[in-house]
Image 1 (cartoon, rainbow, N blue to C red):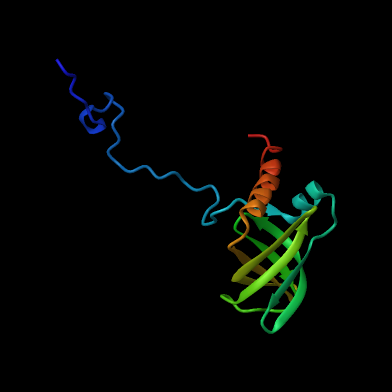
Image 2: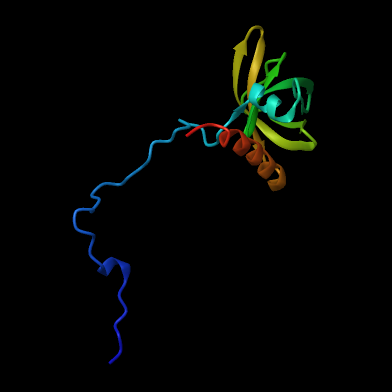
Length: 145
């Protein structure tokens, strides 16, 4: 006699553990997709005092300073106010790792006559993204749970 195959939907729920609503965990990052690491924490990990970031577009070139970083982008302190949605190329060093990426400006905040510019990486090299994730992980694992 051949055994009849059973599908997952045919197996009843465990008594008392049924879920009659769709569970969606609260995102501890709020609206952010990536965990960020602030400049002072990053500088301590890399043993530097600042990280200059070169920002260029068709009619613009300036060197700002990194404020925070995530796998998806950076915040850079610039003297010039740019435009949300503007396409750029950015480059900087994280330790010995060179980071060069296409980018797009996502948000701008005025701070003390300068501008905190949120920049999203576009098509960041996977090796560089993994390097950034490793730096952030090293910071996360230093924190008590």
